Length: 369
Image (cartoon, rainbow, N blue to C red; front, top):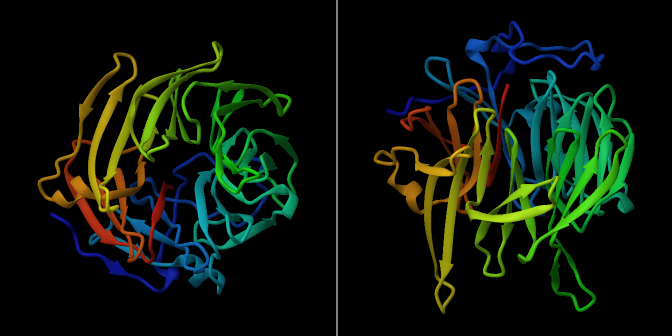
């Protein structure tokens, strides 16, 4: 049974206490809001659409009675919009980090969505895409063929850049390495040329350790780390999305099924959403969506989620797929690329807990704090 949502316009009513996640000791900002672990919040980034300046940030409290959704808190708190286009969002220490592709910046936010600090990327540095964090640093892939390294103490300027491949997308830390998914670039004939290299960056020196290539088309998108395993997704020439298992030491990429979205956990589970869209000769599309969890130790895939209350998910385009690592609630966001997105929240047993509409289109990331 879904619960009724209450839209709150005043952010002052939110009471914050006791920190849910470990705070970054290197972050010297004194405005340190903290959160009660029983009433932690979920921050939802709505990507918006290119050129429309309609990216938004929502904040959701899954444990209040009734549940509470605060829409567009970035605009309310900062008196201005996010910009064009909200690309990625992570929580690290006691801060949020937001990359905005079209408007070309990285921002550090407090838990009210207030901008503490911002870095505007220069033209030759490329537009920011995906985020990862480790130690006291945040890493940003950019369409300049680089990864930028920022000290969380201050993101006023990057510590360093390292060159990787073409238009890098997803990045993730695995041990002392940063795994970088390179996608594609525009060739001299104006057509897109896929990059089939995974770049491996040595974090101790922040230098390129090596490229790992495969026989697949390339155009890598996302990376998930599951204990000792690393999984990569890539677009095929027909625009389906498939997975590869990456062995960094051996330098190999092995086909491993299909999934558009992946979430890795320390318990050795890889949660997957597979959105299979096919087109007929008139470009009419048919989408079949399924959800499963893989035990990476056994390689066994098990279907998850009870869709009896949400049959529309079986044909929906999943744009957001994230997890609350404490409760194991799953968050699924869908899009039709035209109207505000819909978020579904399922418990660890696959039962629907909540469903609500976001403040803009294309919900792309849910971060639990």
